Amino acid sequence: MPDRFGPRGVIAAIIPRQNSNIQPEYQSMCPEGISNQIYRFDVSNQEEVPEALIREVSYTLGCWPDMVICANAVEMRDWSVEKHARYREQVSEQIPGIPFVTATDACETALKMVGAKRLAVLSPMTSTLAKSATDYYEELGFEVPYSTWLKADESIDIINISQEAVDDAFNRLDHEDVDTFLHIGGALGILDKIDGLEKRLGRPVISIVPTTYWYALRKHGITDPLTLGGKITRMQLPEETA
Figure 1 (cartoon, one colour):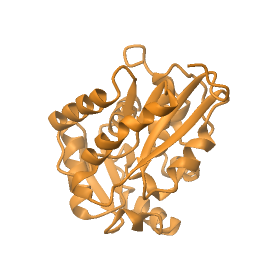
Figure 2 (tube, helix red, strand yellow; figure 1 turned 135 degrees about the vertical axis):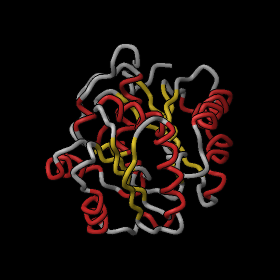
Figure 3 (tube, helix red, strand yellow; figure 1 turned 180 degrees about the horizontal axis):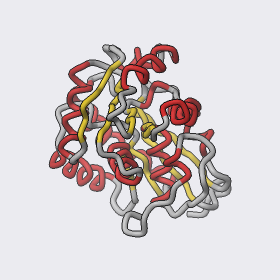
Figure 4 (tube, one colour; figure 1 turned 45 degrees about the vertical axis):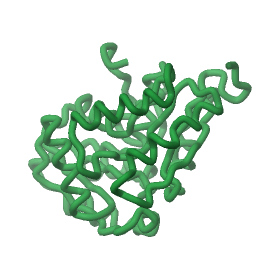
């Protein structure tokens, strides 16, 4: 359906209810002619985050979206490539015929595009959830010799993590044998720091919020370079990926 405020496309993003940063960050990256529509789901039970999204994702159909973003790092729990494939199938069943992207797939694509081999991973919550994410990316074929976490016990605590704590975490990950930094967990609100981090660290920083929004736009055929979010957001998808 033609959309007055989104003649180039309507992007529906289903984001955690406990996250107040993703919505303004997506909007700050929004190209002219794209309409962002935000829906929310509850991530208070970390053991059932994928299930919670699947229960709520059909509500995004209410704005006649051209693309749906599933904006959560589902790999921060007991996860695997096989489980992720099934998760995609379950999302597709709820929004039949509507293209969608997951944050996890966006990060995987971006890592491959920048030639990542050895990662250092930053996640905001517990060591257990960080280990789950590390295991997932190792299953994908990346080496993950270093990871760190910011000790948020609950999702609602992430937004209170200071920017100084984020800087300290990247400093802990700054090892010479790392070629790429990966940040998952979208509530940190660090979109405007990514370009500066890449300049300081001298290597790509794949951050979940800009990477997921960039990936959704590219999958929808929007080629505009974004002005925030690091090197990856200025890149185009290979033809076989787009």
